[in-house]
Amino acid sequence: MNQKAISLGSSVVGIVTIVGVIFAGLQLWQSFEGGREQSQTQATLVSLQSQESYALETLVALQQNSSSQQAITDIKATIAALEYQISIIRSTLTPGFIAQIVTNEPTITFTSIPPTVTLTLAPPSTETPIPVQPTVYNRTLTILVDDTTQGYVNQAVGTSLDGTQPQFPAADLQGGDPTLDPAAEPDLGPVATILGNWLSFNPVVGNSNWGGPRDVPKTWASNYEIAVIYPIDGGVNGITDIKGNFGADNGIFVWVNGIYQFGALDTGPSVAYEYHDINLGNIPAGQNYIQILLEDHGLSGNFTIKITGRK
Ligand SMILES: [Ca+2]
Ligand SMILES: [Ca+2]
Image (cartoon, rainbow, N blue to C red; front, top):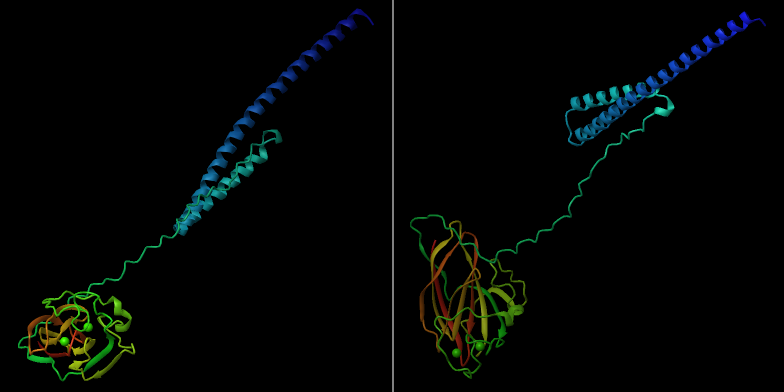
């Protein structure tokens, strides 16, 4: 090989070497540019996935709140568009640059339902409503009860209450022969089962100790207490200005529709009317009841009665 040929060969090798260096540099630049584009695309993908996640949460919220169908349709269209863009971008990424998949499952937070709170019912009122009387002019004074009036009678109390309280002195005058005028409402607890619900506003005389309607005894066994219920028809207008007139040997206790109104004890015999013009109030329209407990603590027991009112 001559010197000229050697020189040409060296020049070709030099050119090839330079071209090779330039080509390698170009490849390196393209690789760098490609990486930068991939990074930007990945960032775009992450942003789109985030938008889609938000759109999905919005869709769930709209459905839970029963929002308009149009709003739901719009958000579904937005989600579809985002998914399309995401699929396009993911197809352009080289495997090494595929971004971590952002889960599109929306997080639904459930608010726990508090346990049912059971409210305690208020106990039924023990107060008897005050009867409201219609305004009726020229009411007629009427006898509601007298010694001929029939009622329900309970003679089973006997001497069960004797000596239990001042209203029921011991039998045969052993507790004296006191005067109590007025007498407080007695405690009938010791004979509650014997009397039943006789003092209720609407007594059910289903207890076998009660009988009637029947004539009400005006005399009875010494020392015994007896209970009486007089049914009173209040008509359509009720009855006003009810007055009681009583004579008792030895004592008497009076309730109107279960509300205690009057009581007194004195020595016998009964006199018409040792207790007179006793105000017993008014009663409403419809069925009403006057309840009376008669007391004796020695010798004979008897009573007399007249109750009037204005109908
Ligand atoms: Ca007695
Ligand atoms: Ca007596």
